Amino acid sequence: MSMRGKRAKHRKPLLLGDNYDPGELRPSMVKYLEWLGLKNYSAVTIRYAGVYLRYFAEWCEEREVRRPSEVTRDLLERYQRFLFHFQKKNGRPLSSATQAQRLLALRGFFKWAARNNLVLVNPTTDMELPKRERGLPKVVPNPEEMERILARPDVRAPLGVRDRTMLEVLYSTGMRRMEICGLVLGSIDQEQKTVMIRRGKGKKDRVVPIGARAIAWVNKYLAEVRPKLVVEPDSGALFLSPTGPLGLEEVTRMVGKYIRESGVASAGSCHSFRHAMATSMLTNGADLRVIQEILGHEKLETTQLYTRLSIERLKQVHEATHPASRPELPEVEKPS
Image: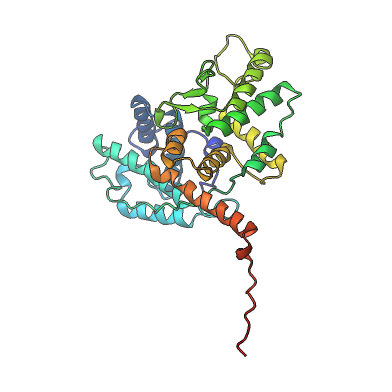
């Protein structure tokens, strides 16, 4: 069976065979992805749309369905049931959010296909998406745990200084992985203690504050390490590897490595730093809308997740420190 639950980064692009019919699913999907590029959608959006469309094309080809016009509402309902029952290599099902993302890719494609007369009727019209579960993040380090993670890089080595600097910037600003990779020389205004994040998620720019400790590490990195990593012509990227600008997966591996080494968790990612920053700020009295602006959330309800995290942490502290939280029942004197 296709779609073995691999991540997008491990999947091949939506390829065409040597002898293909332009009216078939795959060529039509390639044209749709090209259209997304013309409409200025981000490279990440287009890449994942291509992966999810490839999954569907493979599933259809196994059932001898090869043209957009052959995709019916009944077929899509079968595909939805397939996604619901699908199990990844680790035996776990796809989350409702992942199912919805794959179906949203189809909705976009068939809306485009209907406008371009590739289908007479859009089969995704009125298609109901799985209700997304807003579960709590699995890895949310507290301030003490964050200090253990931050202390993991060996700052006696140049790359250790770079890594420590990146961890400090992630924790201080709460920016995303793609956003820290997109920083360039001049992105950080040290006098104003701000960072200009250009073309973040949704291709939106925003300015976020950065703390003094993170700035100090940036200065150390710029003075002692970055000049040694520059490969001419200088790309202008703030954070470099020995071969050029850092890639997304390099950052993921680096952050995950230090989280595991710290003993805080067996897994984790750059988002763990966003969660940690937002939860700590909220616990210490920050306004929810301020956190929303810093994180770059389009909707407040996305940021409201951190109120649940904050309450959970307060409950843990309450149970550990409040004398009335003990489980023993008080002794009650019996009436004489």
